[in-house]
Length: 494
Ligand code: ADP
Ligand code: MG
Figure (cartoon, rainbow, N blue to C red):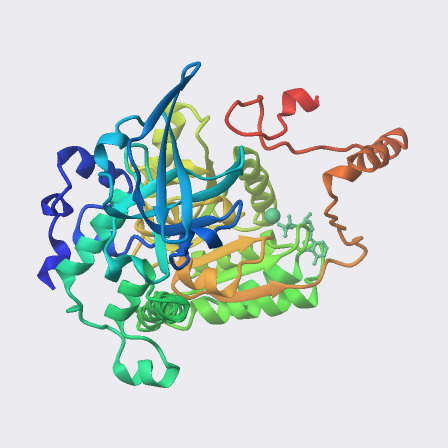
């Protein structure tokens, strides 16, 4: 529908100044306006006779002003007091610092008056009331008014009027994207009804129906999006079909200084099956710290090299890059594999010679930090990308490294379990291998969550460990104290 894309600037009452304010709330078009849902509602009860008013309650009356308003000065306060009456009694309307009110209303005319009722000095008062010309159709019934998130310079009234007019512009002609069969099956309200009633509910029931419909719609489209992603990733492009001499891999594993745990052996099988299937492998290796993920990465990289491809091993820190470089160099010391490491702290000359041998294919396995992502890093034939501590990389960084090859296989390793839905969103679809076993003789790592109230006990425990000759480290969210975030800084804790 075309009206949806119209600018709200052309709605009566919205000049360039208000338009700019609305932009701050993300409202540019009619569509933005009608999709700007209230954060709460104000319920106006039915109009009451003055004799029935109760102290402390927001109330509505229909009454006329009597005689003239009285202005009273009290220090810097200008108090305006005007008596209003209906057939059953009188109230005093009180305004602070709004003397102009006295020129806005006429004696003897019927008004709808709404505000908080107080009883003071033996009088019934309505404090700072809103006053509108009384119109029976508008005011006689109880009303539910939307309350919107605002920005400075806008009022609820402006927003209410804008959105009301935007809805009028649409005039219930919106196309309903939810098929009527689904609406029928789930007993869902129609779109135009839902939109109108989420802003201006006719009554409590209409509000509930509107809300239910709109929530369903949001979840429905998120779910559809996820299914589309999954479908796309299943129709994925062909991957490189690795082909290697399995005998070499087997003797490599046999020559390791330790025997693979059963979990590691299972995951090795899963990985190797994946990378020779002809589809692009997209696999998360999830296992606790110390479960032995590095050796699995090494085996996968080895299979890649034996198949004639280069492998990249991406890690989040320089320390980790150097550690992996050392252990892989040791692991492959009996082979002719050329392994290199690239980090940010490296000299220019050294870097450029690395780049060269990576590009012409001399390097088989490159281990590196974010430096691997730089534009000038190119491969001869990148076949697999392994990322360690995957959760510390962003989706975009992953895309950059993948673009350096032609559909390379992907292995991501993490000690952090990733929920299924999230993995679907982040990776399209991800196969998951879990190492649920630690190498023998290893004491499992124990992890505790302790509330701040018990921090003394934690520090006592740390102290005892240290006195027994052990070490400890404490991780803080910040290095130095910040005005913006209330987090413990390392310098303060130190
Ligand atoms: P993480 O999963 O935390 O990355 P690592 O791969 O760094 O764990 O392995 C931790 C240590 O365990 C390393 O020193 C590694 O050599 C050793 N290790 C890995 N697998 C085994 C195993 N099957 N038996 C004994 N030690 C192993
Ligand atoms: Mg590790």
